[in-house]
Amino acid sequence: MKKFNLKRTFAGVMVAVVLFSGVSMMADSTPTSTTPVGTVAQIDVGTPSGGVIAKEAALGSRVVKGQTVLVLNKNQYVAQEKIDKATLANDTQINNRNEAINKKAPGVVTQQDLTSSKDLVAADKATVTLDKSYVKECTVKAPFDGKVSKVINYPGSGVGSGNEVLDVTSK
Image (cartoon, rainbow, N blue to C red; front, side, top):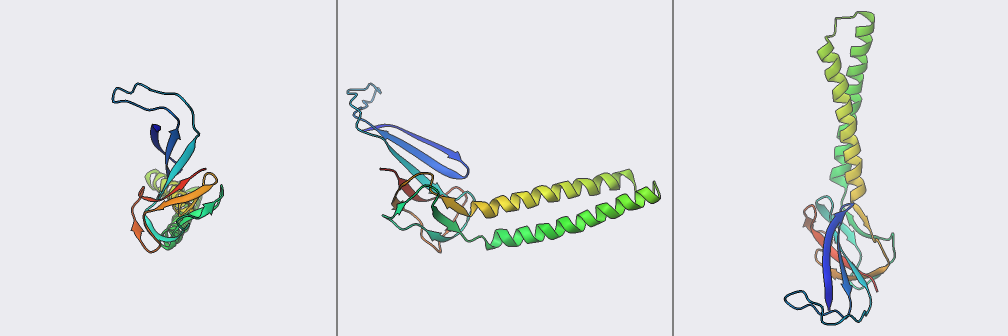
């Protein structure tokens, strides 16, 4: 009998933990028995970023904690990271030039332009950091030893951010 079902998100993985015991719940939520039978944890493996599934663990396969269970095609995220790194390099060069000009001839470059170019470099750095996190999120690992108990989407399928792809169940 199901005691409770809890869903929450952490690190881009949706988790559903179901604790089984001998507790039967009536409509008024009053327990009718309290004999513990065991604990089973289940994780709904979802996609933190949308994309196309490149690889996933097969239905019924055993997985160990830390094993890759899902890989999204990361080509679009890698390409965007390269574009954003190039933008960062260009904006850094402009900022450095503005600062060098301002040192040699104060006032030639306005304070607004100096601040703007510096802020642009900071924003570019944050964007590259975000791009790296998207690339990293394309690989999802099993949080515990278990078995792939359900497969919803298969390699080649496009999935949206947060969509469940497969379940891993312990025990």
